Length: 306
Image (cartoon, rainbow, N blue to C red):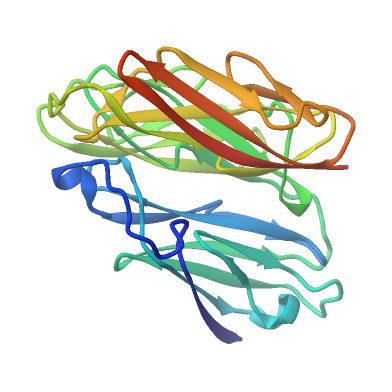
C-alpha cells in the first residue's frame, strides 16, 4: 500500500475564473469525479474528470485541482497518476503480480471527490455504469434527460447499452428513456437517479430538486456530457447538454445543434447521437446553443480505438 500526491492547475490554467452565476449558484459545494468507479486490467488506462457543483446542483468553474492517489499505487505505471488539469490519467503497469484498489481523489476550492479504481490482473469481463449528468439541479416540472455510459475493458464505452432507470428520494418520475420529470416541491429535496444493467452493475447521479429562483431564464452556461469518452470503431453513443441561467435554474434546450471536429472519424445527428466510423483517432463533439441574445458552446473529447 502507498500514497502519492500531486498538484495541477485547473482548466483555466491559474487565470482568473469567469463565474457567470450569482448567490449560492456561484460557490463550489461538492466535487464529483467521473467515472466514480472503474476496473482496469494490465496495461489499461482511464481518464478521470473532476467537476465542481454548487449547492443548487449547477456546474461551477473551479480553481486549481489537487489530485492524489492512495492504496495499491505500486501497480500503476511509474507508481503514480498523471495530472491533466481538471483531469487525471490512471494507467496500470503491463505486468502486475496481483490485483488491488487505488482511490483517486480530487480537491478543488476546499471540496473533495474521489473515484475507486479496481485493478484486475485476470482482465476478466467487467462493466462500469456511469450516469450523466453526474449532478443535476432541477426545478419543479423540469424534464431532464439522463444517459448511461457503460464502460467495458480498458474503459471503452459500449455501443447503445440497455439499462433500467429508477429514482430514489421522491424527486420525481423517470421513464424508460432516462427522462426525469422533477417533482413539485416547496423545499429542496435530494435523491438519486440509477441506471442498472441486467447483470446487476449500476451507476447513480445526484439530483437536487428545489423551488425555482425565478431568474432571467437566459442561459449563461452550457455543459456537454460525457466530457471525455473512449469508443470503438463503428459504435454509437448519445451525448447530452445541460444549460442553466445565472441563478442556477435549468433552462430548456431550444435551438441546440451538434457538430464534430473531424468527419473522417465520426458524425453526430440532431439528437446528439454520435456514430464513429472505421478510422481511429481523437476529435471533439461540440454543442451550440443559440438564442435571441447570444450563443453558448461546450465540447467533449472523444477517442476512437479498435
